[in-house]
Image 1 (cartoon, rainbow, N blue to C red):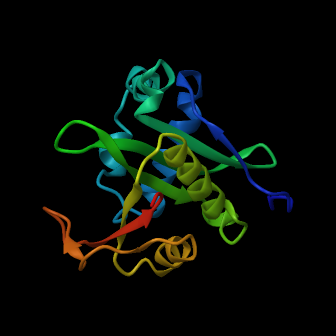
Image 2: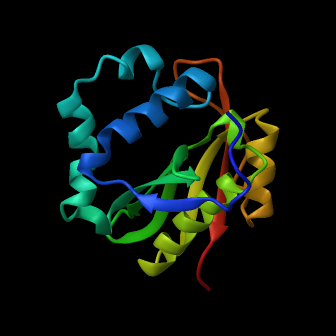
Image 3: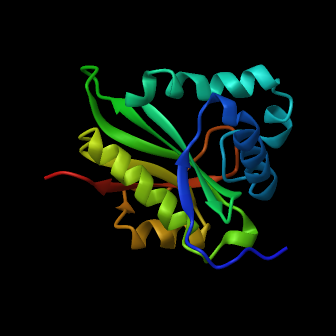
Length: 177
């Protein structure tokens, strides 16, 4: 069923949204098995309580440290991103990291990825992060192009993800200064 041509709506996920998060996460792992540091086989075994717990920490007060976003088109969940603050060696939250970015195949090319990244950037800026970091699977041209359009630049050379044959490129977006 084709989605209408309305702009994506980005919303935060709360513990009661665990089925939405679970479904998006499992779809992402099935669609792009090499793009994430987990597998469909591992995560499909999680209990409902485990999915709820993943969302409970951000929603119950630790939201200053991390937040999950879902993208919807016409009320249908079609994308996911998770942003969190990272502590430096002194324990100060100076930078942020972007994880689990994924857009459903039927929603690609509709601005969903950009809207998710914009939400993550705004969240990190509101917490005064100096930079937003991410890792993109080498060879994932569409994702890397999106991040470059959003202002991210390569941060070093690609590196092999431990225990896999997958290479990742670190990217960073300066947020302050």
